[in-house]
Length: 326
Image 1: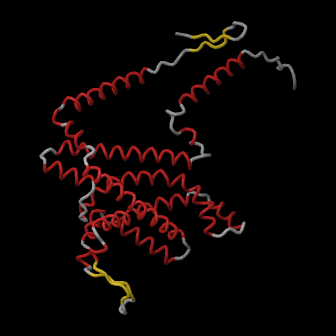
Image 2: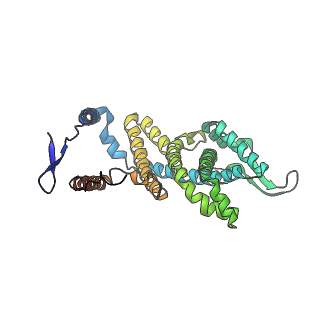
Image 3: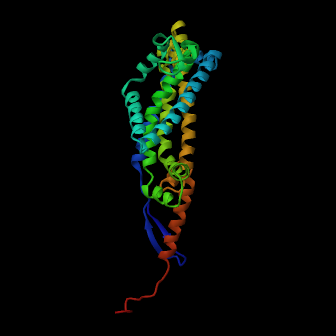
């Protein structure tokens, strides 16, 4: 159906034809049918045992496991981010010794599986039953039993954090390198020290590049905590739900409980990541294109204003100037 847009003197100017998006309607119909089939399969299949899921979703041992999973994630990411910033600065240093140490660390921890590293952290008390601090081949100042300090929880946090630091360091380094070198040279010309340049010039701009992959690494770390059984650490969410499911011969509902909790925590982390990206993306070309659902109304209003401006411009009579000039 054609729509005629009228000007103030009732003269038709634009003969507009609305665009039919048949593909959108067909795809929406297909997706709706598939979602309905999925929901029907989840609800009507008694083998999922949703009553067991509801009865145990907030059980004390499940909530304790969720808490330990969060503790492991936060502790590992804290260690990883601290190491990552340090290693990235060392990689950018003019000191060849620092660059070599950082490169060797990244090479080792990226080159060996995380599960293998966790196994070694669990066996550290077997390799070194007693540890001491002192002068090599000289007197010892402090000594202690290894397993009295490196408990399963500490070993799990260190194993995850040291491994994550190697991966995050490359993310941080790429973010620091994304800032134009001319800005650093200009800051040095103004008399700023290297520390001031890093804190005030480079890091604030590099965060726009660093935040998105760091958020992905945090979400990945949440699920990587399921590997701490190698230490062995037996209080995380995956181990607890698997143990409860196997002991009660009902593994499916307890797997669903773990999936629900992981999805909930991941959703919260994704929301936080979105707002961090929006904060550090201020002033960039794509900062106004984030969260299209939130800005859909404003976009439609802008389109209406632009369309009305085009109509007004079309109805304006301009003098004929073709005969003027050379």
